[in-house]
Amino acid sequence: MKGTVPIALTQVDFHAGFLEIGVPLMRLAQPKIARFSLACAALALAACGGHGGGALPAGVSSTGTSSAGSMSLSKGLTAASSLATTPPTPTITEYAVPSTDSQVAGITVGPDGALWFAEGNPGGGTRSSIGRIPVTGAPITEYSAGISVGSTPYGITTGPDGTLWFTEYDGNRLARITVTGSVSEFPALPNSRSTPELLKTGPDGNVWFTEYSDANAGQGRIGRMTPGGVLSEYPDGDGPYDITTGSDGRMWFTESQPTSNAMAAITTGATPTQTRYPLPTADASPNNVALGLDGNIWFTECYSNIVGKITPSGTITEYPLPTANSCPNGIALGPDGNFYVAEFQTNAITRVVPNGASAPTMTEFTLPTAANGPLLITAGPDGSMWFTESSTAKIGKMSLNLPTPSPGPSPVASSTPGPGCGSGGDKDGKGQCPTPTPGPGCGKGDKDDKRQCPVPTPTPNGCDQHGQGGGNDNHQSDKDSKHADKDGHRNDGHGDGGDNNQCGNH
Image (cartoon, rainbow, N blue to C red):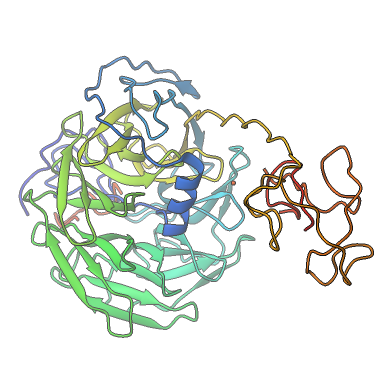
């Protein structure tokens, strides 16, 4: 224990990440749900074209305004983004959860395309449920049947079996829920106070999770559970908190206790091995993690007010946030290739625009409701960033207002032979192929796949009379004071493959 938290917080409830003034607490840290897998990162890259190059201007002005409900605001719009243009100003909307006594934590995208989140009411409360909100914002549905009362659901992720897996922090177990609301709980973990936090599906098809073990200093663990419920645990000192898959196939996680204060990685084979990477800044309290398009793991440091990145080889770089004592927690990769960070203390979401070896550009966006404790964040299927507001029982949506790409000009077909023809047909997609020689496989078309057919009758769309070709296929403040904890321990169609009206004999 190191005394009181060196930041001023105004929340009254000190359990599950809400601090009471004057309470000697150690940490404030939250889970990050729905971290991007490599597949998701690749999707974002394909959609956005990657990061823009060149040096980016730094600095944040203070021009934000606020109002209730939905709003559009910014604390300084920076002149850089991964789209190589000035990023649009996001629009922020908040949705109240029906159970106003809940403290919302983890959030992720479910198999049904809706956002799913965990609700608890730690410290003796009875609220234990999983919530669902569609991208339209309504209706919000809460499921509590089958979840042990007082178990405090906390982290949540989509599992390898098409269900949503979640941790029960006070229930000391993992559980899962189907998209229809059917819940099944696994047996309690062997350690009576494992305090499972956050979880992700690994490249091995199993669910990996952290056991913070705040009541057993030095007894933290990394857990792995198969879809069938077979459990394996691996000792990790104290304070493992968030976890995700790295570009190297290892599971990367934060070690947030002061005695650890490191990033770490574990292999996913039959006999996993762990490697620790101590942070340059002492007592930084690393919280949440996300995989970037650059192949690095980006993470937040609550105590040191830093966003950091670590390469697969272990090189760490740290970047201070614009506002002091913001206590960054959840971090997620957006569809624009930038990161979005939930700042618990400054009540804001910060956009972090990577800039290669140079420092990223950061812009803060203040939330409509004051002191709502933004906790965890994820990218939604609608292109928005969704996050939990743990102090006010709300779900927030940040619409990025990204521009819609303009379609390019349609190419004009030509009868001049081009380099993509020959025996293979129109491989270069320019619709330029020589007249084929009739062969035995013709008739109604090239059934023997030798592309030896009579010259087809042209049609207005550039295709042959059989319709072949021309396919236009142009996608915490956590519960104990990392929780601000009570005991001071924190913590296609067919055709030419997408080329308009360009047909050889396919």
